[in-house]
Length: 468
Image (cartoon, rainbow, N blue to C red; front, top):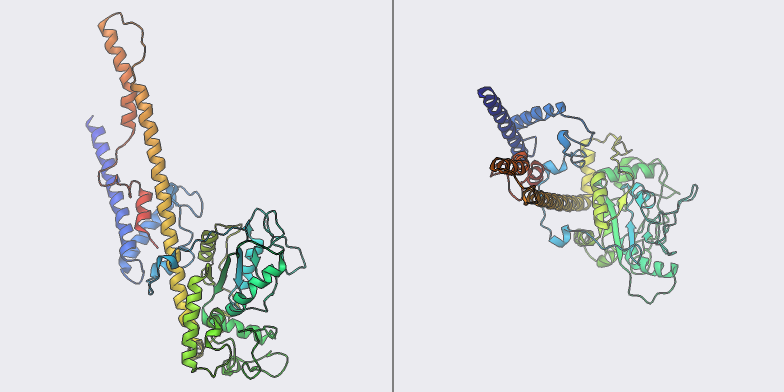
């Protein structure tokens, strides 16, 4: 008896020690999320985590004992280092739209050059799980993306409707062109105006700029772009060309940076802003500093109002936010490809500084967009975990209620054979009481501090800490 009691005490002590160690590791990650701080404690946490290899391996995305690993933490270390800089309203952050693909709603993709928009555009027509998938045929650049039961398109993009509003049309062009184009493509309607949900992809300005230079260096041009603003395209004096020939192939990076009319400079800010606010391409209406300040604020405002935007540097998070925003699911996961042509260019630090200066408005816009993007992602994950925790708690309440019902049925008096003596009565009562005692004994009670609504299981506690 003493040996059994001693063994049981040792087991309880071991469980308590393990729980204390786990709690300590969790708090280290919570209090010191960055590895640049509390390095000794992080090394201890890493050592402890390395011991989990002894658990049962279920899969690459699953921890021992059935705990799921967060697939978005492995993509980058953004959330561990992320400190919000800007204050956004709840409407800015909680981005979920009631997109009705069977109705009249339309997704409009604003494709900015060299942001990975071609890859994302292909995801839209080839990789979304739909009741009526887009029809894409080999050798054809465009796909047919009709609504279920209708011959009407729900997607306005390069790979569905083509460059209907001009090559790489910007915000100014799309907002004035898309409604009329959509009405001309479909039968006259007496219904209220449809909802247009604008989306786009942004990229780190330096990487995007280098990528555009390499693209132009290989002979690419966007001469077919219309640049329509206030009903007309700019004159040659308003928008001079950087080269005299058919293209600018073979240009050096220095030549690319030296052209004062290069539309690659601050392209993302210009393409997301309302150009009519600054007189379109007429730069004589105000100073350059004032002009770009107005464009930047307009781009920020339009970006906040968009149904969705993603970042090239965060593919998995971009996929997650799109799916959550539109209640659509991609078939295959996005992949983060870092081996681009821009990443292979060796650029001296002073040249990088020059590029950042040339794109100072894009740099500011991207920092703003990144902050908004990560705050949206953080809020969406918190909401998802809270909903999952509530579902688990409801399921546990349901199971506990069923257990109590079963116990009540076991304890309910039933007809029994007439006893022949008092000893048989006692024996029968003990027999009926025994199953109830066994069921209660099999339910191990949790400590008082653990059995809370928010932390009723270890998984709930981990979710509540919100390790980003």
